[in-house]
Amino acid sequence: MNISTKFPVAVHTLILLSISQPGTATSDMIASSVNTNPVVIRRITGMLGRAGLVEARAGIAGARLKKPLAEITLLEVYKAVNAVGEGGLFAVHESPNPNCEVGRNIQAAMNPIFISAQRAMEQILEQTTVADVAGDISQLEGIVLPDYFAPTNS
Amino acid sequence: MNISTKFPVAVHTLILLSISQPGTATSDMIASSVNTNPVVIRRITGMLGRAGLVEARAGIAGARLKKPLAEITLLEVYKAVNAVGEGGLFAVHESPNPNCEVGRNIQAAMNPIFISAQRAMEQILEQTTVADVAGDISQLEGIVLPDYFAPTNS
DNA sequence: TCTAATGTAACTACAATGGTTTCACGTAAT
DNA sequence: ATTACGTGAAACCATTGTAGTTACATTAGA
Image (cartoon, each protein chain N blue to C red):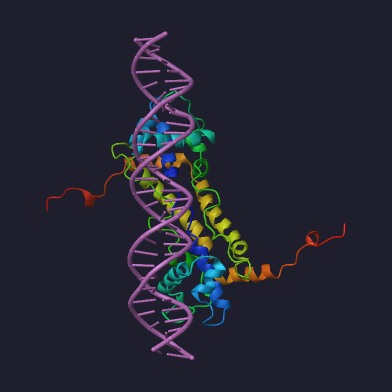
């Protein structure tokens, strides 16, 4: 399996919150950009709120960022939405045979590797902020199509 | 979600194959060490076979390693069993709204980060061989419990 | 008060995983 | 040849997790 879409959706949400006029980015509006259900968005803003990244209150339209995007790393978002469940990125096979030399030690032997592999992945996420992603988006918007995409007369 | 247990089970299987007398490590025997069903093991040895790591033939008990464990990296095993399905480690939310500046670019903006994060994780797996894991296991077997685990008279 | 938005619970649909049964086929020993 | 054992593969089931959906209580503000 793979890491939950909650993660990219949360990033998407944070960017929309940052570029929208206050009170504009309702869960309905965000859901229509993400192409999902408003409740899915509220679940995510709820998690972002519990992590201290946004402030969302019942009855008030649009959540408010509690930090500028440049101070929110992707790792914070990833952790806020619990993108990788409990037990870590790698699943282990439960209760191998304790009467077998391999069975009774395999988990202890593999665990350190699993942990450092997961850490390596998370460190990449830590090096990028949500503002970086937002920057990439405006860059993409400003892109000029190369000539071979232009209409021709041939 | 997390990465399939097929991965640790495959490592477990390879180690058993390497330390067992030829023809001894049947899918039944391996399954009893892993604590699962023999068919699960055969599915995995099948994948390891298609990846060229072992040779398993119908009717012949026990698969045979085609390489020494020291020449099999964890990354090879991970790829052999397709531990992370198609589409990569990170899921993306499908079809965001193309009429929204953020929606139509979010995937392109996040993809490079997802790819390098996944790569970082895989590079760790590439640095370890199955023989390293097997070595850790024998080390664990030889461990001497520290004093505070010893019976006392107090 | 009325409207609009959020928070939350509950339910559903769907997909993926792993376990299980079953059976055909291959090998090897008797 | 027959028998026993093991693998390969298909089919099916149970469980789990994710996301989508409905419904409703609650809150803010006009």
